Image (cartoon, rainbow, N blue to C red; front, side, top):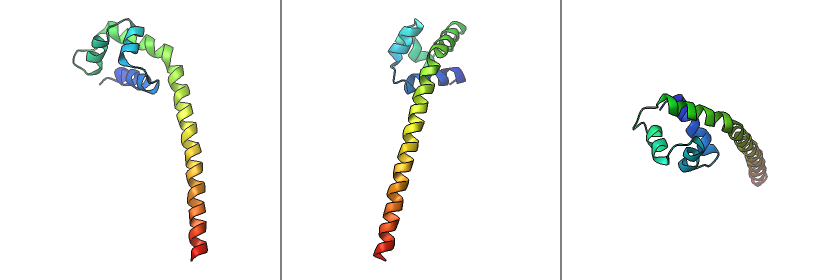
Length: 95
């Protein structure tokens, strides 16, 4: 899969959009989009241009989603550390 296609798919999945939604925004059919993504047909220059334009319009959304995911991961790591430290204290007291 070309880097462009992979990037579009990454943004699409991060935004939790269907192929049909993305294809509609690009002005192509879902079937055509699917065939390009699955490498069943070559990526035509016209389709590549549509993908680049779509990315430009949607990358800021993907970045904000990625930031939110990172924030949640950090929160979970802190929570996990607190639980592990509490468990270690409990183990020390029981020894």
